[in-house]
Structure formats: structure tokens, C-alpha cells
Amino acid sequence: MRYNHDFRIVISLMLAAVFGGCGDDESNSSDMTGRIDAYDSDGCQIIDLSNPSSSSSNVTVNTATAGELVIKVKENVCTRLTGTFDGMVKLKNPNDIDLQVKLDNVTIKSDSYHGQLKFNSSALCKGNTYNVELIGSNTITGAAHEDSKNVLKCESNLAISGSGNLTVNAKYKTGIKVDDVFTMNGGTVNVNVSRTASNSENGFGAKIVNGFIMNGGTLKITANDSMSCYESRGLKVEGYDAVASTDEDYDEWNTTECKGYGAGKGYIKVNGGTIVISSDAKALFAGWDVSEDAVTSSTSDDPIPDVTINGGSLNLTTRATPRDSQGGGGGHGGPGGSSNSCGSDNTLAPEGIEAKHGVYIHDGEIVITATDDSINASSKNKSELEINGGKIYALSSNNDAIDSNGTFKITNGLVVAFGASGAEHSLDVIEGGTIYFSGGTIFGLAANSETPSATKGSYIVTSVSSPAGKTFALTASNSTNVLGAIKVPSSYSSGTKLMIMQSDLTANSSYNLYTNPTVTLGSGAAWFNDAILDGSATVSGSNPTSVTAGKSSGSGGPGGPEGPGH
Image 1 (cartoon, rainbow, N blue to C red):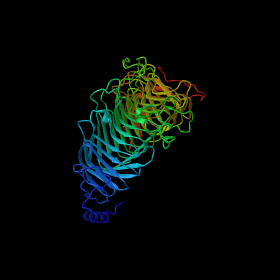
Image 2 (cartoon, rainbow, N blue to C red; image 1 turned 60 degrees about the horizontal axis):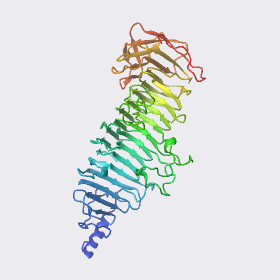
Image 3 (cartoon, rainbow, N blue to C red; image 1 turned 180 degrees about the vertical axis):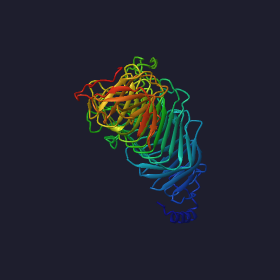
Image 4 (tube, helix red, strand yellow; image 1 turned 180 degrees about the horizontal axis):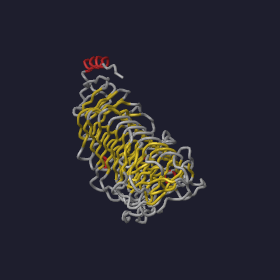
């Protein structure tokens, strides 16, 4: 949309001649010039942060406060920011309307206490959106000070697009804080959390109240500052109940407008684009927990903390060692954890993807290497985990690879899941729960394997010796055509129980399992994440092991014979 600014310029120049070039009477700035900034080809008013003393009838720039630049936008005009500013840049939106903002090679920084870009609203829960287009390279760097705890903050919806990039450097707490829904449509956003001193708070790459939607572009979060007891997270969507919690970050939510505003929100949706997160603690999680966060007895105002993946690419890594209240291992008491010197309430479960309600994977490519569960639907008896497509690589060094504390359903997809040693599983479901399987190709390797309890196809469970670095391929007993194959990472040594689920398997039939064969890929075939065969292939080798497919009775317990050597 091109704004008709020529008429505004003529009128403004006439008024300047009549009234002596007086500035906007709403500004308290002593250095306002009354000069009308230039406009770009889209009609966006250009504000040079390096020389910001300018205003128009719709945009007021106020530099009266040292280290703080306030830009008040009164109407739905497009604002293009460029240049450098040392301190805080605040866009005020007194009418709570949708605004277009271009960031064009902007640098905002501070070595003292500010160093922020804020998109303000007159009040929360207004539903308006800041639409931000990225042009060129932009950087916002906060100071290691409480006043820079949210380096990029938006008090309404935030939508980012464009062909440029934005780097956000957080030195105190949080890189991006959004008080409503954050949507990525394009551009590249890099968030670095690198705190140098403990402030008794967890760091976050992005902390969002009502929802995160990934449609396109690239979001990369690095939150590996190794802050003991206050480890940094990747991206969290918190969810919001009817009234404010006691958290000081939400003391502005006790308003009529905000009552029930978060109902049905609290979600993460990935439809496209690329997400790369490396964090000490949880990487990507929808964290509203009805047992801990609900403040009313009604469920009508509750968020629905789901993670839904419809496409795109995700590469998630967590690094910190899990700790529980007793100082044991993983988030469910698994082995390998550190002693809990951080206090009995300061637990740590560095999971890759976690949702307090449901995890729904329909498509996309997902690679997760986690110290706790790679994927977890974590609310006891209330969670749902569904895999209906896509390609998934999940490796956990201290816990289950994929875990549901409620129902677990697989209808399609390509999945390889590496769980930990001890009592951990490649696929796990709550005690007494059921894994429903009706399609796809699933390989699991761990100390234990939860077998499906209701299945359209069949499964194979067998023990393998010293699997690290080995290739395993499955064929029919009279064929060299590969039904499925995996490559085990050379660093993996946790589990020896191999599980294979596939709808094409026939109960009580024998199959050949090859160890370290030669696998010849068919046309278009490839190894997804160098770990699981995606497509057709043939195999050659000697002395395969004969394994027999089992089939559950569908009554809730595992059934069918396991392969030899179990």
C-alpha cells in the first residue's frame, strides 16, 4: 500500500510557513525541528534513529529523555526505522491499531542499562498487531541489567516478515517477549541468550503469552549460557487464565479486557519455515499446566497448550543434565542425572518438545537431540500424542525418546527413536496406557521398548548387540528389498532392544534382520538425518538373523512373540 504523502507534505510546509515551523504540541522534546521525514516508495515515513528529532501530524518523535527514544504513531501509517541508537527505542500506539513497521539496517544497543526495542499498546489484550518487515541486517543488544530483561518486547501481537534478518542479543534474561501471539511469516531471526552472571532467573530465547505460529522464514535460538540452577530455555508459550497470576510480569492483566482473553490459546503451531534451537533447558514448549496454573474452577477460560506441527523443519538440542527433586536423573527419575544442589523445588527436564496437553505431528522434518525426553505430552492422564506423518529423529541421552503421559497414536510417518539405558524406552506411554499403531515405519532402540497394544500391522522386538555405529536393515525372508533400515549413531550405546513397527508386517511371519549390510538406495531414496531410510533400497550381506513379527491382541497388553535373543 502506497500512502498519499505528497498532499501531507504540501499542507505541512504551508503550516510551517504560517506558524513558524512549530513542532507537534503533544511532544515535550526540546529539540524537535518540525521537519517532515522522507518517505519510501511504499509511502512509509522514514525515521533515522541516528538523527531522530523529527515529527509529522501522525508520527511524533520525542528525545527528551536521555537514552530513550519515543515514537508515537497516531494513525495506521507505515514507519520505517533506520540508523543507530544507543538506548531504548519505544513505539507507542495510543489507539491500539494495527501498525506496519520496517526495520531497515537498524542497530539498537546499550552498555549501560537499556538496549531495547519496545512495541507498546495502551493496554493489554487489545488484539492489535505490529507487522514488522525486516530489511537488511538489524541488531538489538540489551545490557546485562534488569532494565534490559526483555530486549525485544511487544505488548500485543507481533508478526515478522521480509527478506532481511534480525539478531537479538540478551545478556540479562529474555531475548523476545510477546504479550499475545508471535507469528513468523518470513525473514531470519537469531536470538542469543548469553548471560554472564546469575540473576536468580531463568533465561529465555523467546517467551510468549498466547501463541506462536511459524509459517515461514527462519528462527534460530541459542541459549547455552550454562547458568547453573537457572538454565536458559528456548521458546516457551505460557498460556493465560482468566486473571493474573502472582508473577510480577502479569500484574497488568487484571483488567476486564483480559478476562477470558487467553481461552483456547497457549499453543504452538509450525506450518512451515525453519526452527533451530540449542538450549540448556527445554527447547520448545507449551507450558500452561491446568494443575498448577489455573486460577479459576471454570474450564471455559483455559488455554489449550498444544504443539501442532504441519510442516517445516525443526532441529532442537538440549544440553543440561536433568535433575529431579531427590537429585536423581531424568525428569521421571531416570538414571544419569546430577545431584540437586539447586533445591528440592528446582527441578530440570531439558526436553526437546513438550506440551502440557497435546503433541500433534502431521508433517515436517524434525530432528531432536535431548538430555531428557525428545518429545513429551506431559500432563498425566490428560495428554494426547499423535504422529500422523512427517519424518522424526528423536534421541534422548537420559530418558525416553518419545513419551506420552496420556494416549499415544501413530497412523503414519517415518520415525526413529533412540532412548536411554536403565528403565527408559524408545516409545513410552503412561502405565496402563495404550500405544495405537496403524501405519508408518517406526524404529526404536533403547533399554526397553513399549510395544503397541492396538495395531493394524505388526511389530518386531529383538535384542541387538553393541549397536553403536551399526546399520540394521529388515527384509522379507525371501527378498532383498528393504522394508526399513536405520543407522545407529556411533556415540549411542544406551540400548540394545530394537523395536520395528510397520503396517506391512504380517503377524507370525519371519523376516530377515541384517547387521551392517550393504544398502543400495533406490531412485530418490535417502537417509533422513543419516539415521533412517526414506525410500526404497536393496540389501546385500550374509548371515541375517531371522525375526518373527508379533501382533497384539488389542486388549491393552503387549502380545506376539519377540525375536530371538531377547
